[in-house]
Image (tube, rainbow, N blue to C red):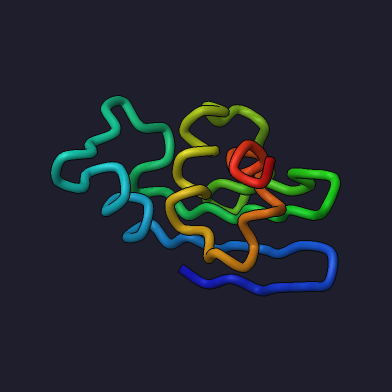
Amino acid sequence: MRISKRDNGYTMWLSARDTHAWANKSGAVWPCSQLAGRRLVVTVERNGLCGLARDGHQTGSVSESELIAIVTDYLPKGLRHLWPSYEAEAA
């Protein structure tokens, strides 16, 4: 996993190895994963998700719940305020 932080957001790159390991981790397997073994690039700005690519192709056909879960698991603490699943924690 690599991440590039900017003033208004970040871009996260997950390798095929990263997504496979995430979807198949012991005690937390993600059955029927659309992302396991795929390269994923996620770009987020203050207004939310603004770019998504799977295996080098722009896509919008990824399970929203799976995307939220994988980004949440890999996202460093300093950037969590920019990801929707952490909004409730801030309140």
